Image (cartoon, rainbow, N blue to C red; front, side, top):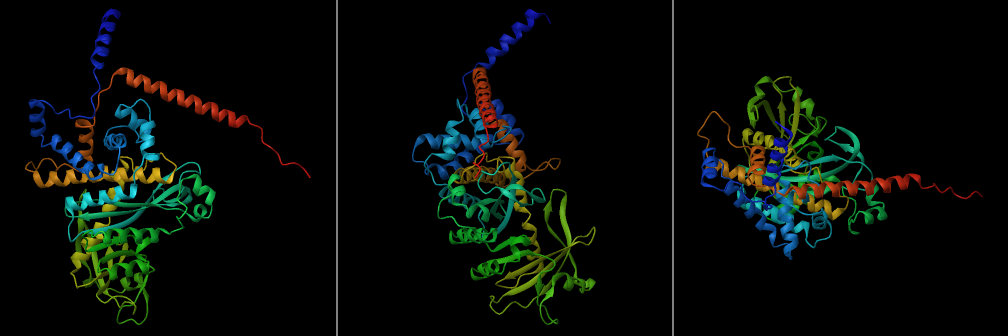
Length: 476
C-alpha cells in the first residue's frame, strides 16, 4: 500500500467515524438484526424494556430532569464495557464533556439513597418474590489506599484473607427460585472513625451516626426487610453472624427459620449429654448411619454433593420453641466439617435445611457479579456518595437478575449443546447490544486532553506539597 493509499484509507475511516452521537440506543434495529438476535434466542429489545422498567421504579425520586437523566446514563454506564466505573469513564461513555455531571449526581444532587434502596428492594420482590425466599447476610471488603475514604482503616477483610487497608460493608441479599440479588447495604465504620468527629465531618458522615458492629448493621437490615414485608421463610449467614444469640432471637421472634453457620467450637446441648458440648465433639461421636448424601444445589460444575447429619438440640430457656438442630456438613473429598445452627417454627425435613444452607453461597455470586459492574469501584470518599454509588450498582445488578429470570422462564433451553443464558453472559451481551455508543473522534480526543490536563494539575499540586518546608516547633 502506498502512502497516498494509506492516507485516503485513513481519511475515509475518519469520515465514517464522524457520525452524530447515538444516545445509548439499541443497535438491533433492522429486521435483519432482529432476525439474527431471535435466531440466537436474544431479545435485546425486551432487555432494554426491562431496563426501563427497573429505572422507572426510582425515576420519581429525582425531582429534576437533569439528575434523572444522569442517573439513567450512570446505570447504562455501569452495564457497559468501560474499564472502570469511575465518574470519569462513565461520563466519557455517556457522551458528557466532563465528569462533573456524574460527580454531581453522587455528591450534590438532591435525592435520597435510602429511599432508592427501598425502591430497588420493591423492584426485586415484585419481579420474583416468593414466600419461601431466603435472606442472606454477609460482608465484603475493598482494598483502598489512604485514610480519607469513609470507613477505611487497617482491618481484616475476607477479600484479601488478611488485615489490609480496606473499606468493609455489610450486605443483605434475597434469594428465591426466580433468582438472587442484593437488596440492602451498610458501610462499616470502625471505632477509630466514630470516635473522631472531625474525621467523620470531613467525610460527610451525619452527626447522629454512632458506632455499630457488623452484627448490629446486619440485624438492622433484616429488620428493614421484614418490616417492609419481604416474603421470606428463611435466613442464613456465615459463622461471623451465626454465633450471635441476639440475631437468632430476632429471627425467632418474627417466625423466620434460619440455618446459620457456626464455628466448630460453638457449644450446644444435645441429649443424652448433659450441658453444652462443642459442635466438633458431637460430630466425632456420630455413627456412620447418621450421614446422608444430599446436594446443596447446582453449582457451575454440577451438583454440590456433601454428606450431612443433624442432631436435635435443647435450646436455652429464653429461646422460642420449635425445631432446634445442629446441622453438620462433611466434604466428601477430605472429610472437612462445617456446622450450622438451625431453627424453624415447624418441623422440616433434612433436605430443606440442606437447601437453605446451600443458598448462602448465592451472596458470594452476588459479590462476584456485582464487582463486574462497579460494586468494588466507588471511587468516592464521602458517606452519601458511597451509598448512592452502591445503591445504583444494586439496581443495575437487580435488572440483570430479572432479565436472567425472564429469559429462563420464557425461553426454555431447547438446544442441549449450549447452556441457558447466564447473568454474566447477559451482562456481556447487554454491553454489546444496548450500551455500545458511537461518538465523534473529537469527543475521545477532548477527553484525552481533559484527563492529561487534570493529571498535570494533580502532578503540580503534588510536587508543590513535597517542596513545602516542614515547620518545626519552636524550641523552649
